[in-house]
Length: 257
Image 1 (spheres, one colour):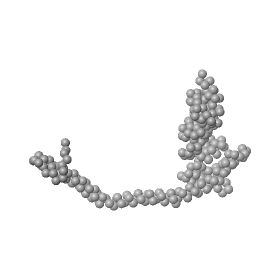
Image 2 (spheres, helix red, strand yellow):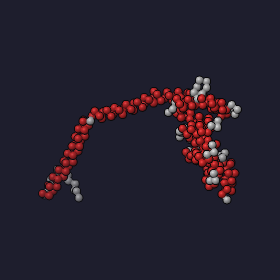
Image 3 (cartoon, one colour):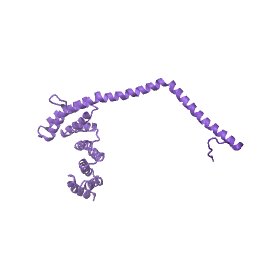
Image 4 (tube, one colour):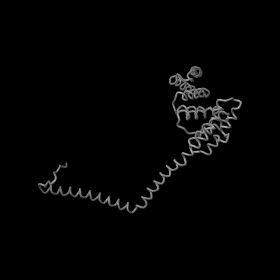
């Protein structure tokens, strides 16, 4: 066990003198090792200084290049794409709310452009990598879905990526609707379930729980359907979909018997 010795302490006997010499020797050895390590580090830095400075310079150039790209290229491109989107979105809104007899022609204007402005397809092509370019995939997908062009709807909705509370689930549910119309029911159920899981809110969650339940019933997956219907009943009792639960729940329970 080591004992504390005051500064200036003199050994009382030969054994203590040997011990003190060993302690001093060990301490000196530690400091010598540290000095040697520091010297080797300094030598290595001196020998490789050119490469170190070069690496630092490359990192600085990359950072400055990224900041410059964002400021002088990406931001103006984002603004330009958003400006182009305005007219296409107007066409889309008119088509959604307008007369069914001319709806497809207005969706075509939204997709392909009009009045000297780009449509969604040209925005996707010319402004890839921008937020507007990504959002154009969403609008293009739903334009095709509403025009009964289901393969195209799946393609564009699948290219749309978003963490948005509403748009993310709606895009996945839209793919489910397209697969349902193509009579690919298993795929439709899978996308309805994805739409339920990706975000939870009072609008899209009960909406796609109900669609998943109805689709599951059509596939004779009665237990799955009952699970989804009971979730609507318990978690979303004030939703529009809750008014339909008892009818489908009764059907599912009757099938189970």
